[in-house]
Image (cartoon, rainbow, N blue to C red; front, side, top):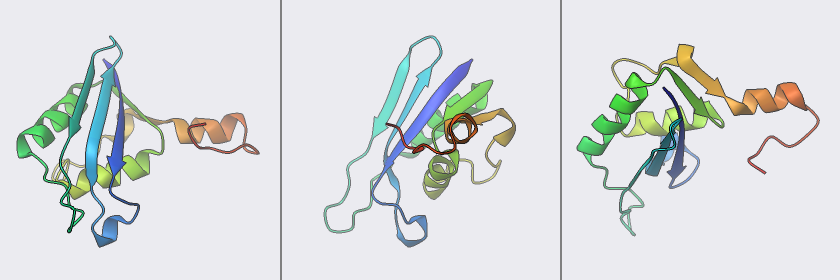
Length: 113
């Protein structure tokens, strides 16, 4: 099974408190999953369910391939909520579309546009 994964975060700097407040996964059969957590307005910290983190981790572990846009960012985001803290990220089954974009057209922007 191939899945795609994306995280939405409270910022860009994971070393200073940025964490994901939403994670989306889509399987190749079209089934979609998403988890969205409330963010404290004063702390800007999401209140993340440990059950949700375990479910996300299980879906990643069960996948044969994982497709991401800018995988380094999403992997760092998931690490901040304890996803794959022990086992490490499965880089061998990871495909990053950012790299493909550089290979196909290195002189073009490499964002989601």
